Image 1 (spheres, rainbow, N blue to C red):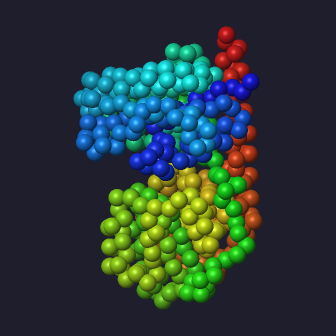
Image 2 (cartoon, rainbow, N blue to C red):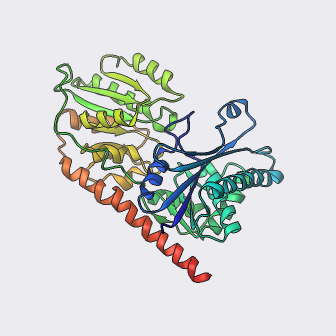
Image 3 (cartoon, rainbow, N blue to C red):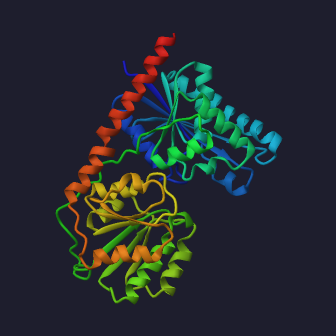
Length: 399
């Protein structure tokens, strides 16, 4: 009989945001090949009207992937007062944990192991359930940066408790592990990178067929269009290339977000209209198609804990230009791409110029194989299965 694994997360696709936490969904679907998996998806609301409008429908459902997903939401009524914030946040999370567990036990059963993603609210919810059921609980942290979880006294208090009570803490990159240790030196996270869907993101033999694009170096960036992704620095780098006379390139930007209008305006002001296009939000199949036909993938982020899109592009055999902002240093090596300092348009332009003038050559098969070996589905499942076995064995020995 398969062991029951409960995934607890505050980041998970929903009707309002179908790509939020999609990497957690990818992991849950992969784990379902070996375990009986259910998901408790949480939404912690504030009292702001915008937050209340985004409230999801609560209750259990069976998704297209046959996973049982139970959605719960709660409001943190007193988020800022130092003496009450921890109590208020704990009460909101406890309510979601009770309701979610009750619903899941009716339609799915009781978990043998809890795997939480992101310390708040997922991690502390998992600890709550662990203490009620006396089952092991582990935490995988993704936050970029980890300090996002430490804004109030209440958050810091619950984060420390979560890290202390978790049976195992996993970080998706060495840089994130270091951030966690800096906050709580007693915790020594192990590093397991995110899974890359290497069966979905694959190379293709055919190149571009549009005559207007043949011969031009295509740089692709796919990201949420927010300041943290550093896309403005990429636009300024493209402008520097044009000023140098490097005209045989195009910049394609996929994604949406709060900065999109501002970035499109900046692109026009920089005179990039003829070489830069914004695609808007893309479906996974569209992301793959662009990755397969671009020449170079670029991610100019100011901070990343991993950089899944970098791994996806590499799985398609594409070299990458990324910034030394945490996660990319864990994913990108000298045989697979170039790393530059963040917030440096000059360095980005220099790296892009190497590709425009064909001074950089990378083997697509080598690029892909590194991702398959390190972050592919089989590699990820083997690492997680080993960790699960250790936690389950330890729990059984205590009975």
